[in-house]
Image (cartoon, rainbow, N blue to C red; front, side):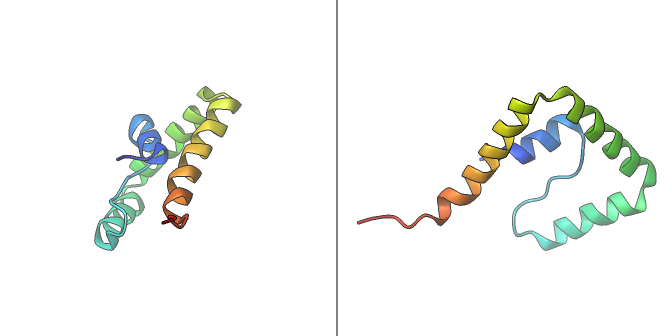
Length: 79
């Protein structure tokens, strides 16, 4: 399932999303942003605009979803 951070990036055009653990895909995404200054500028502008649209409670909720998704798998299961 897609996490809150991935959904936010996809829905706002603020960056690139790559599969977890896929180093070549991450390298490609970074190279794409570094190699295309206009794309990088659009992502930065979209991030600024998205931040202005989100209320504090939405930002906290997004952060909580991301933290939950990352921490729950680390909790040892009983029995």
